[in-house]
Image 1 (tube, helix red, strand yellow):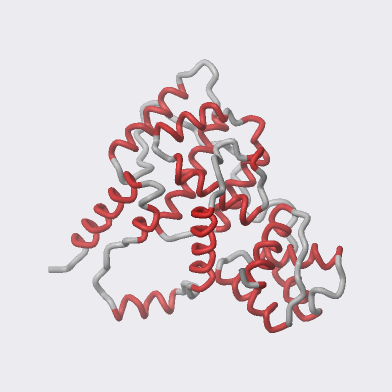
Image 2 (cartoon, one colour):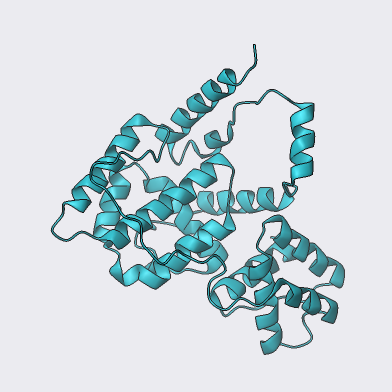
Length: 275
């Protein structure tokens, strides 16, 4: 992996969770590229905090100009993406749509219904499941969102002792999330230095998963930042929406939902054509 990617990941984990890691020396040009990568992913606060924290421990690694830019991002005390104080309220009768697939939505609502009526209801477990599903949905719709991934990891570390992982594993199996949730676990290991003991739902970190993680990172960092200006240009060049085939990248991880989502995207695309 390129030194830029290595330092990017290390500073991310240092800034997000104060991980103990080593940053490699780079030229100021490469440091500027790293900051640009952080801006592209909208995680300047994480990277800036990581730079400031590391500079306090090890001097003469971070150039002074880069350190000053990092200070402009602002040091983060605690969380970067604050969580609402109140936990979601789950209703046994309200039908919630989490997936494109009808069967999966029905299974999800059955899980909520059963848990709400359980004698040992665990809201923390339901919240964790929802955060996991949100990460999976974002991954399949648009790709990796490091802020959302951090939110999942932070919730896990703050509330892991309250989460019933026996229930979580049962729900993951029921919703056919085994492979895709394992991939999300690999992202937590790779980007935020989580260990296996923190991720009971993680089954393995194999070569295929590592390759997918690296490809996702490269694609995320290589893609241009989405701005209102370039979105307008894109729409002018191509006024007819194309069906989003991105879910098919994860077909081998979540085939039922990937195929359903592609069909749904095609239907939406066709319905948006102005005849």
